[in-house]
Image (cartoon, rainbow over all chains, first blue to last red; front, side):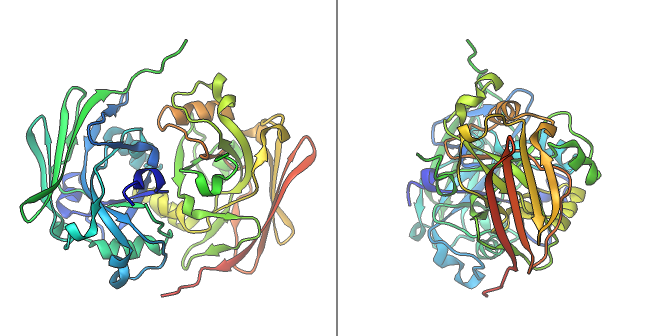
Length: 222
Length: 222
């Protein structure tokens, strides 16, 4: 299970699951969950660099990720906990200008969410270390200055509700990751900056990550 | 080789949008100036003979496509090197919940649900690279209950396969086993439970792949 980065077949990212985040981007607060996919090619781990592609204004979005431990579809919310193997601290990096253009044109979000390095994620946290997924503190700093600070109690749709909703559309498989939404405070990161983030339960830090930010290198052409 | 087993080993499905001008026009869309793509989850794969499921409330359309199976990892791949990264091909359908997609487009929301339901990526067997000498002369056809609905040739693709590989790999690194669906010709339309979809791929007049998918209601197991 700890190697979900290599074995996982999909990343499902929930949109607008914290009302203050929906409002800060001028979006309506949703009446039911929605999601988008991020490619597993976008994973990076603690210490690796987030790449800013040319022409992209990239924002950080701090999220609690749920790691699926058992295959299933049409999973009921009351059974959802049986399908969770553990958790991870993660960022849903987003090319905000590309996303805004896609929204205006009614086009997919896949590119704006799917660039290489756009899913920084921490190590697997076993389920028993987070007894209540509705009480997890998340915080993010850029160059040491706090930008996002929230608790999963502010999620509009709970983790079991999300598992029920997603699995009624797409079967979930072992190693799949569900990114559960971001609290308010999203903002731009620039190359040369450093993003740090941490996850804590009742004052105990379970995950602490650091990601330097660089320009995406130009391709080497002979 | 992982690419032969792409249904089980592939890490992503990248589907190109509006790559045949007549298809763009039939749905009232502008013909694009550069390619765009969306992701379909690998959980949506079904193979020859398995049933396409129609979820409740969805108007599901067929879209017959030539799929390219990636054989070698790479990013920022130039169009002239693209052929080195191709392992082979497959005949595929990009099943789409058209009503959900239209709603998503109007609301500026992701396409992931409309494109991502279980069974929404019917594919055939792995086709050896040598079996398709010219990817710009591949006949794709689809019938519902024996009546031809789509009948096109890849010469009508706006963006050719090398350009698509170059474009996608500047955003997301490609990995062995990834599948790129290269767009659908005109003639998309609805399929209903009880019908049977058959499709065929031919290269230089020789049939290379023939597939058959019955269509059923998605049953609720809850």
